[in-house]
Image (cartoon, rainbow, N blue to C red; front, top):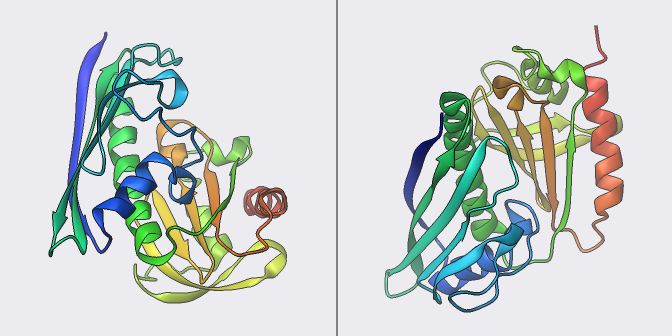
Length: 245
């Protein structure tokens, strides 16, 4: 049965409103995934066939789609309101994701809500540590075994994290081909893990909790970053994480 939803989050970040604006309109590969920039006017085209319904830089940006392209959702709207703080040196952001889910509403809402927290955390990490550096983005999914209910625990083990490694700790995580990554464990809960190195944000998604494969995305800001090489390396790492006995 179709049912409306609304997910509202508010946060402050050590970035100017103009920097937040650039991130959400043209820099989405730095924290989410690369998207076509919106046409800068009300009524213009937005990402994934959406329409721009509010455009007031650097204060308000909204896009809306009524042809989402997924059988579980018929309407999708993303609304961003940005207000200056500390004489414009910082920003307060109000983010509202709303629309209509058309099937398995509780599962869809739970997944969208928890993903929102992780994506917005990654936005703050990007703004604080990397913006506006160019990014090489890679994303990949685990094998069928990664859809099992307890599959995400294998990710923490493969990284060499103990169950009590706290969020915020500096770690040496095991990456592709046994490479040790000097990183900060910037996010951790039962659903997601975030690592921040000097040059990258590496994100791990426990989408098995919602019936999908575990995923990884790599936002690499190094001058010589190679998205294809990152994709191949981390795909091998992820497949290996689920081939161990």
